[in-house]
Image (cartoon, rainbow, N blue to C red; front, side):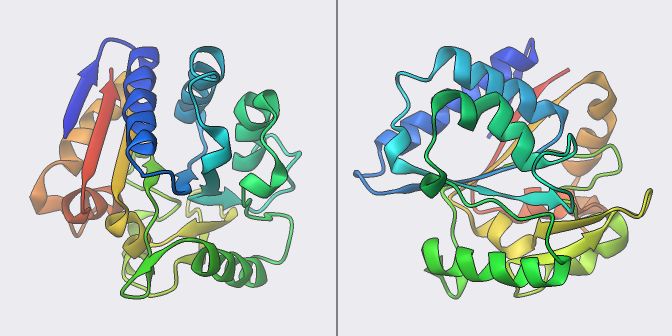
Length: 230
């Protein structure tokens, strides 16, 4: 599914509306959502807080993270910190309803700990955790979930979460690997900004599966969804 909108706010509204419809249709069970960080999700979080608080069944949702920078939750670069400031903390989400990646801990140990949490709390199929929604972005270099083009191998590992390194500034991150992204019930890309138009075209070209992590995920996902605005 590919949808294009006139503004990031409209794209965010459409994504949230579709997500809440899926929650409603989930037969009363807990619903698992993996969040991303960066500037694009900031709009999503603000729209959700401003327009959808009263119609969101918060008690049935459990939040996880796709990736996290190895910083403290109070650091401005923290993906959890962004979501907490703009959404979770604003609507009073109980700490028991989300599972943050502890970026301040030793990366390798935290990747193993978070893998254990996900395997324990998220339903699995064939040994792979199956989230209801995995929310992803696309970097201008075609990366997604802190898997950069120089580490395509991280798409194929059996471990749900591993340590990765940003090759441009050598910052360390913990990220979701390929299988949980492509096996999710909904693999959802939110892409905004004119600077993303070119890479999005490249990602949608099947010939680039082996070149860009985002292209691999898009073309292999069980149910890929695109909400875009340029």
